[in-house]
Length: 312
Length: 246
Ligand code: SF4
Ligand code: SF4
Image 1 (cartoon, rainbow over the protein chains, first blue to last red):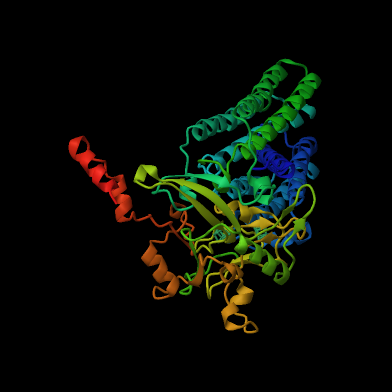
Image 2: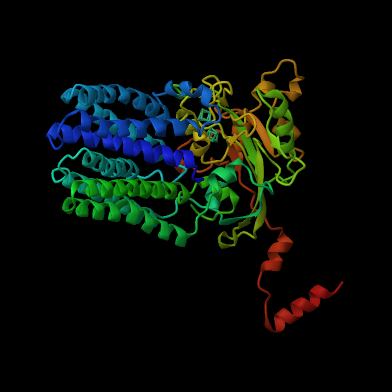
């Protein structure tokens, strides 16, 4: 599938934004961060900005963004519509939480819980847009929603601890939460990669033309000689060795380096720690962006069986 | 409304395509483009039609395949395969649509796009396993086969023209149009008689359209004899000798 930059940015940024909202609300509820206007601004402003930037980028992918409001109407059947509705609704508790925390310096526990719930729900809807598509076997996979949630939590917590560090909050109570999110998020992704690499093909060209019981079928005469929308959108191919390399980059940037930054930050004075954690957070976001690029580039659509691919 | 009709319609209009007679002439592709570019809400795009990289939206594409059925006793054949919307009963292209632009008609099962509502998100094209939807690169809305809904019910057309353009134009009569929900209809009879198939039933999209597989050639008596192993020895020699006599 064609890895469109706007969608990659959207899912990576909004995933991190919602992850950060969950991280902040959770840390506030358990008392891992001091609740005050400094931590309120530092944690919740970047979260809201990431979410808003992601949503704006997603509109950039549309042919008719001026009609985007219509996309809120079909939540009964469409995960994309549900995602839009959930994203808008999630702003209500999140803005309330931010208002109370940053301006009044107090934690509103009900708003914190509602923020967590809506953030998880929204990311789940985003993932289900992809996971519900049967023609793309690598997306129609049970681990896709957990991976989206896990990596949102991983990148969001990496941003969260960096933001908390700049306010001078103690890092030791937060660090285990961040490490856990990073390990779980990328651990799920690792399982997903293992699973899709050994997944048997779903169909062959003969199946797509209804002759699966007759023999094998091979394309000899494509229907058109030039590119078209189908080939541009669904005919994206990536060589196996490139994808192996990019998976390593994603793991190094998204998991290994943020973990190293986390450990070192615990040993360093606060300004240096904050700087290091910020670099770690940026790398965590880059790691997820690479992973998202691969999520598209490695996914094959069954329609390519009509265009000369033997099995998908 | 992108929820599917609560109960599947009794009437299921669709196409039956005969892979045995299709000669791959592309006439249906051209007539489809001709009719739909002038009758839809916007033209079917054609960018750089005479330039370096022509591209455009088409609702019907014909692929040429080679079938190797030697393992099951066949002798191989070319199969021309027209590909367009199958007007699925369980059309995920409709349910994924966030805007209500895509819908399935309750009265006859035709799947359509209301261009004025379409935001051009492309999700429906991802959801179709058969590649039946193409984004119009000029109008920026999704295009798909309408089963010529503006011909089949059109009382301004002579009766014989009230069928989809592709069906009307096919010189090999490889395309048939009718109600596949009615077991007595000509198309349903044809499907029953020829063992018509639905594409990729395991995906459970439940397509309405059916494809008739190529007939197995039935060898003539002469061909059968030619395939028999020739007897050897003296009798074989005598046989061949006599066969050569006028
Ligand atoms: S063939 Fe594709 S576009 Fe047509 S109804 Fe089925 S899923 Fe939808
Ligand atoms: S491209 Fe248009 S018809 Fe297709 S899902 Fe998006 S809004 Fe609906």
